[in-house]
Image (cartoon, rainbow, N blue to C red; front, side, top):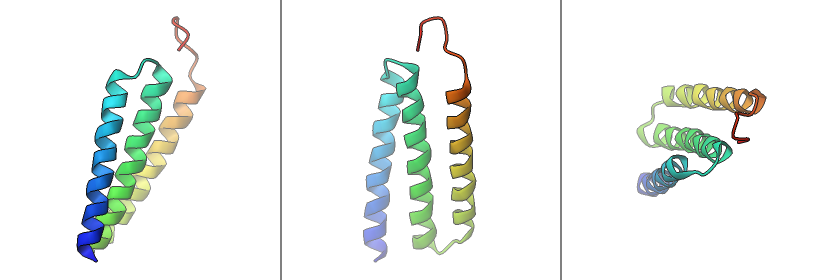
Length: 87
């Protein structure tokens, strides 16, 4: 079972790499913000999987804090005024 969960963690890590590429090369600020949101969500998923594999319940608490921070960052992005370029 742990091997299967580690494979899931590796797939999530590949998703994080794809979102990093999108964050760097995103044509608009909204694309970069969605990439940052994907990074946060995937990071939470990886932490939850690792908490199960390593039997460390503290990682669940860390994942919860990351999820709250990602939600606050998204709310802050949607509330900001547009810049001069119209992004």
